[in-house]
Length: 128
Picture 1 (cartoon, rainbow, N blue to C red):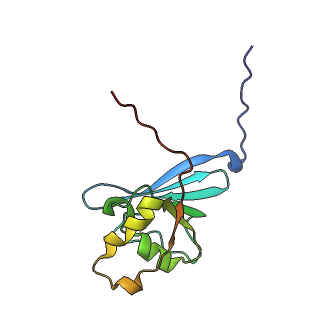
Picture 2: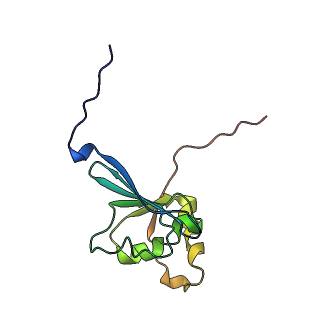
C-alpha cells in the first residue's frame, strides 16, 4: 500500500523558479529558485542587474555560479557590489576564472567576492 503525500497550503513547502534571464540573445542566464523559505539565485549572466537590484534587500539568500562563462557570470561583480553581504559560491576552478569576465576593470578593483566550494570527491574516469 502506498502512502499519499499530503499537499500543504503552507508556502514553506513551495518550489518556484523565476527567470530574470534565460539566455536569449545576449541576455545571459539568471534564475531565482525559491524552495520553501530559501531563495537561491542560480547564475547571474545579466548585462544589467537593475531588475534584481531594485530593492534594498538582497534578492536571494545565496548565489551559486555554475561556471565562469560570461552568460552565467558577467553580472556577479555588480551583484556583489550592490549586495556585498550576500554570499556567492562556485567551484574552485570557477572562482579562479571569474575575473576573466571583467578584464576591462582594474585588477585591484575586483575583490575576491566568490567563495570556492571544494570538491571532496575525486573523479575517476573509465579508460577503454
